[in-house]
Image (cartoon, rainbow, N blue to C red; front, side, top):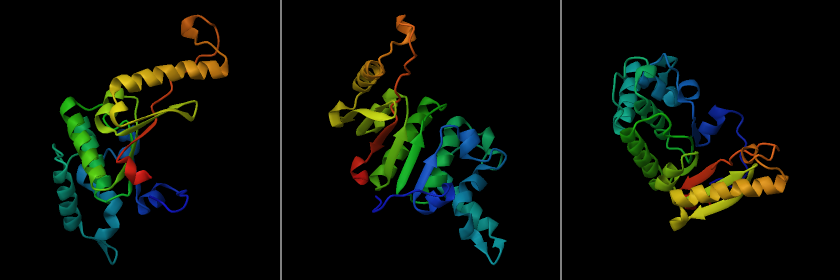
Length: 220
């Protein structure tokens, strides 16, 4: 993906290089709540619609509407984006970043707070992006979600990779089992007992399933 190490100065620098991030807390870190969906979606490409200091609002609106329609975002697109349903907010965020044709899409809990229908739609959008060659990395604690959309799962504990699952190994049951077994390994390495077992030692947190990828080949 990159021929050298990459340390972006800020989010804008990362986006210019083709690295985009859909945050877990979309209402705080994903969009500007008071602005409508079209304006929020247009923000990463706003400069394309500025000519000699003037914003071509109609062209911007049409382009944003196209991006939202492609991802089937529904609701009042002229009202504050905060008023859209959780699923439509999340699809609008994906539209916002996928229109830039990123090289790397980073996702954090991409289906948190959305209904079942929106969840399936988001899975399809992420898979479609991967199929187009966009390397996709996601962080999630939803094991079922991982099993449905990933072809490679890395399980982290105490900041290091403790297990890797690929291909047919990527199932909800395997992810759960590997995550639970890593708790014991971390506890043993620290020589402590979880409080829940009555040992009175330092509490050992469940290691998060932190990094996994769809289209793993794009990252090699």
